[in-house]
Image 1 (cartoon, one colour):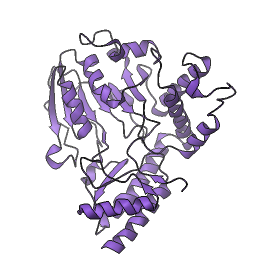
Image 2: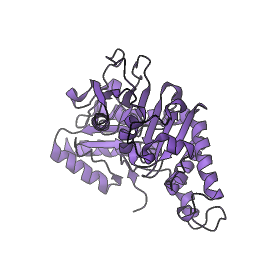
Image 3: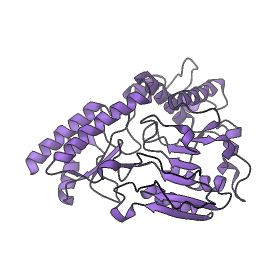
Length: 360
């Protein structure tokens, strides 16, 4: 059937150009006579791959010199534990709970100390971002934690919380590299690569150096200490080599597109096409308060579960795949990451108009 328009929330669509390059290099990476999948992570060839990937990421985000870039494994979920294990010196942390993953991170942190939920939007099914301008931040808090873009619910922090001088930790899995960001405002930024950057299996963490110490919670395993990975340039053990290689290609692709300012413009344009349609549609409606809307994940419903199912089935047959909402909320969700071309969104809206006319 050829390439479909893939609206999956993750693992998600990758730039076609990157996939073609990887395919061309599958058996012989740049004259090495081997695939990146089968080469030693200690080889000169791979050393260049990982160093170039880090440098390109630093260029894209203007990462300050006092931040380390780590390529890790274990998904964002492992960071839910690694962060308190490495940062909870006072055993106190404040969490802003705006979705499923922030809630899981909060529950995990409670195993290590006094984690408090200081703001939440669960009262309205996480359909908005709470006002975070004046929060009851604990004076002993080691950090304040957010999930910046909520993949399931389609919300995004438009302004960062006022942490009253406390370190801010952010899970940016589903908005990573979708727009420029000021890294210096965060203590740690991390995200799973499988939404907007590369294949599943890689987690990228950007960590301010003063937080990388041997002073971790007693019993923290060697592999779960940031210092282990920082001291060894992400090569303490075998990293997810092929995944890092693809991430590196995506970074080069982003630079070639013109960087994150260009991506932001494109992403705003794509999201506007879909939101403008949802705002005037008589059949479909968005589920997120306007001022909290994500550029990356757009959930919507018809209000009738049978009609939702019919829409998903017909859309799939028409080549618009993975539009089913997360199992915890139902409905539909279009994830329109960097690699989703604008025509994918335009054609989806055309299809939605046609479906509405046939099912009004």
